Amino acid sequence: MNKQVDFLIIGQGLAGSLLSWELIQQGSSLHLVDNQQENASQIAAGLINPVTGMRLVKNNDIETLLPCAKQSYQQLSNFFNEEFYVEKEMLRIIRNDKEKLNFEKRIQDITYLDYLKPTLKIPPPSIHAPLGLIQQKQTGYLLTQKLLSCLKIYFQQQQCYQASQFDYQDLQFNDGISWQNIHAKKIIFCEGYQAIHNPWFQYLPFQLAKGEILTLTSQQELIPEMLNFGKWFIPLNSHQFRTGANFDNLNLDTQATPEAKQALLNTLKQTYPSLENATLNKQQANIRPTTLDKAPFIGLHPQHPNLAIFNGFGSKGSLQVPYYSQHFVQHLLHQTPIETQVNCQRYK
Image (tube, rainbow, N blue to C red):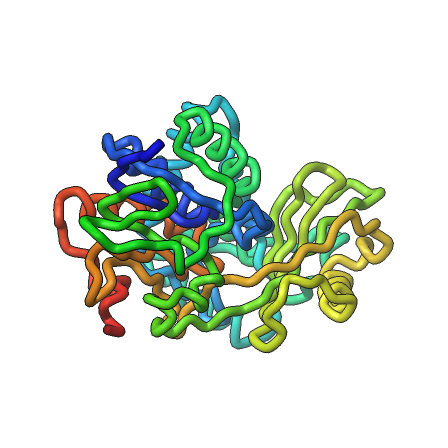
C-alpha cells in the first residue's frame, strides 16, 4: 500500500533519531529508513565537554547548546523511564607549563567559572599528573546506544521505521519525492559518513576521521571521575571503563586495528599505570562524519528544495544534535532561517 508522509528520513544515528523524534513531537508524519549497520553514533563515547583543546577554549554557543542538550535528554529519560545522560566530573591532566598558563588565564575570565573550578586538584596516587589536575564542570556522557535502541522501538511502535538498504537510484521526483511505496514532501539525509556517496550532497567538504574505542575491565576499583589526557577515560561502573579515541584521516574503514589498540593502551598506561593489566572486553571502530570547517551541514539542496541534509556533527553530536534538531524543525515547519554557520548552502 502507498504511504503518504511529510518527511522521509534516511539513517537512524543520533542525528536522524533526534530529528525524527522532534518532528513527531511537532505533529509531523515521517518514515525512517535505516540499513541497521553499526554507525558511529552507536559506538561513540557520547562525551559532552564544554571546554576543549590545549588552549582550553569554550565550545561555540555552549550557553545555548548545553542547556538544550540536558533538557532534551531529560525529557527523553522521562518518556522512556530510562537514564540516558550521565553527568560526571572530568579531571584534565595538565601536560606542560603552557597548558597550566592557559588554565590560569581562563580562570580570570568569569564566563569560564561555570565550566572550570578555579583551583587545581592534587592527583590521587593511581594517577600520574605531576603538574596537577584541572577540575572541569558540567561534563558528562550520553548512553548513545541505549538511547538509539529505545528510539528504534518507539519508531517501530509508531509504524514509521523500516530496516532497509536505501538506493539513491530508487528515488523518484514528482510532486515531492517517492521511494518504493513512500511518498513524501521532503527527504532528509542523516547518513553519517555515507553522505560522501550521496549524489546530491557529495559536493560538501566532509573531512572524515576514523576513531577506535576500547572497553576494558579492571580488577581494582576505578576512580569515579572521567579523565582527559589528550585521550579520554570514562568509568562505566567501579570496574569497567572505556578509553579512546584516535583520529585517523587516512584509513577510512570500520576495521579495528592492533596498532590503534596498542597506542590507546600505551597512552592510558602513562596516565593510569595500574590499569596496565586491565582485560580488554571490546574494541570498536567507526568513521566520524566530520567537516572541513568543523560545523555541521544542515539545510536544503540549493537546486532541489525537497532534498535536505542533517549531518556532519563529528564528535560533538551529543552536544549539538538536540539544539540543531529543534532549530531545523522550526525551519522545516515554519521557514525560520537556518543559522549561517551551519547552513549547508554556505558551500553551494
